[in-house]
Image (cartoon, rainbow, N blue to C red):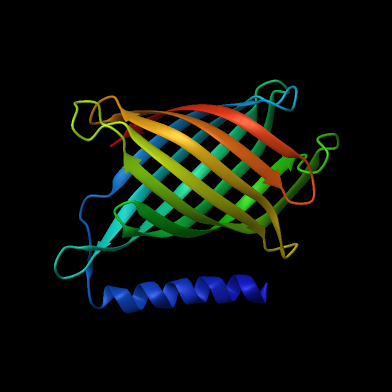
Length: 210
């Protein structure tokens, strides 16, 4: 509990300090992502995820981005078992270190009913968690009409209640804007559930951008 309070207090003080010297972008970006995941190793583990987020860009006096604040809500359903496995409500703080490197840290409340050990016994619990995200991206066809982007993502997840890491995800993917308001994506993901079983998955997503 002390760790949770310290994290929230630290984030609040950081935001309060930065607010004195800069301003928020007046138009946040809203995103609604629908993602389908097929597990190549585990049977009966097709997942459908809905994620809603809004990104607020914090600018300095020269209108350059200092950091991004992204509240989000995510709900994940196991299609085969007709089971809502996970819900998450949280906030992510991130920064574009370079145009091609993004680093972020989040904290979220998690409600889960899933097996993350041996995929046999489902456990129902709620807890506080976080993830650390490092993303490298690059425009693959910069001189054509097709704005195809490739990326590599590493995401480390931590459970505050158990004070241990629970998984590390490595993702390789492609993103293709279909219009100003729609993006399509396809990914390969390796999930290392620390001390337990691993997964390799294929993912397809469609994101509405407002």
